[in-house]
Image (tube, rainbow, N blue to C red; front, side, top):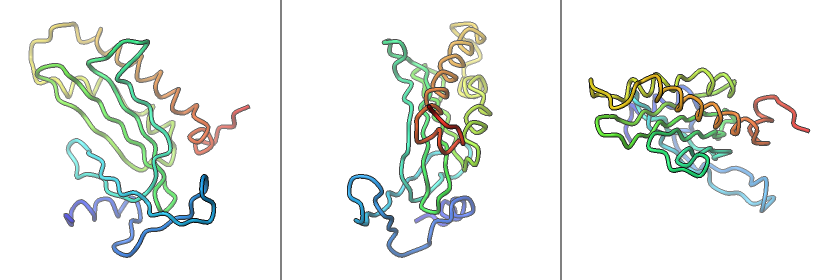
Length: 169
């Protein structure tokens, strides 16, 4: 295992250096122990985030209102073995001359983590072409609208809402 990757993640997520990582299974098989899954999450410009935990919720933006998207976000929330929460944001693009953007980190406040991200920044950063086929502000507006919709859906998920301190009826 790459030492730089592990040391970067350990500083955030208390991943034990060795040994068997076990948790009690809450739903499905009470009392049975299962091994926590190991995640390696890409981060643009940083070492990957490595931890053991479980995926709690996700929002996939590849389709919106029944239409396939060629620029979109995927959002995920994880609980680490140590009980912390990790937020992950992927900006994926199929446009020539643009590159994907990945962000992830510890999220003590999930709303702040996801709403503090700028979809326009990811779009601007991903574009390597000085000439765009559409005005930037039009693309940014549409991507931001869809991203904010996804964040609302993610935060409304019962598991995530409890973590975020919200109570649902």
